[in-house]
Length: 68
Image 1 (spheres, rainbow, N blue to C red):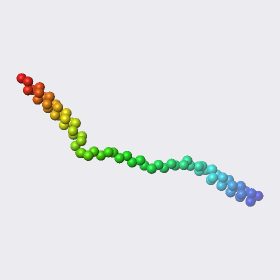
Image 2: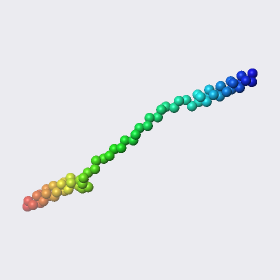
Image 3: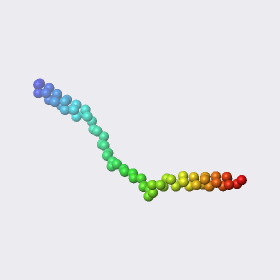
């Protein structure tokens, strides 16, 4: 009877530890994606449009004040 109780206790212990964790879902690891921005050849590329607008406004003001 003692052997049966020990065997039953061993089986219960083994079964509970086997079920306790379950199966973890597989983890899919992906390589990081690197996005590089295109570099401009000139550092003053952002100044061209504002300078053109200032020149146009100056030209329009000079024409309007020249008519007296």
